[in-house]
Image (cartoon, rainbow, N blue to C red; front, top):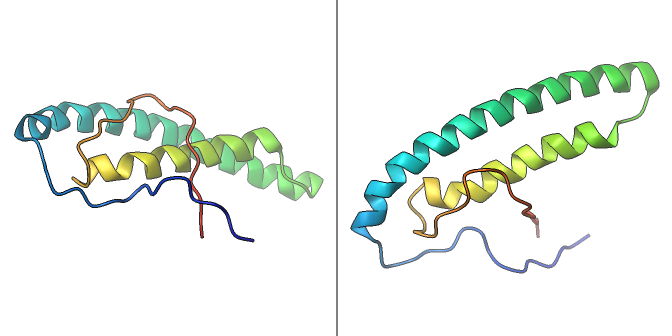
Length: 101
């Protein structure tokens, strides 16, 4: 099944701002803290999901959605964190979609 990709997440940008490079340090710290807390909660959800599947033989939608939200958060912040763009993302999680081709 193919998905339609509305915009690419990882796109090369030639120009870069020196000021944004300094601001990025503060953003790295904030995004790292949020992703650590979100990651710990996602791991707890996955652990609970494992027991849910073991006992009931099916998945729980809310637990899967939370883990998926963590993955989407990390992937949507990568271009900024890895110097690919100067477009500053929100620090807190926001709704994003990650598509595969």
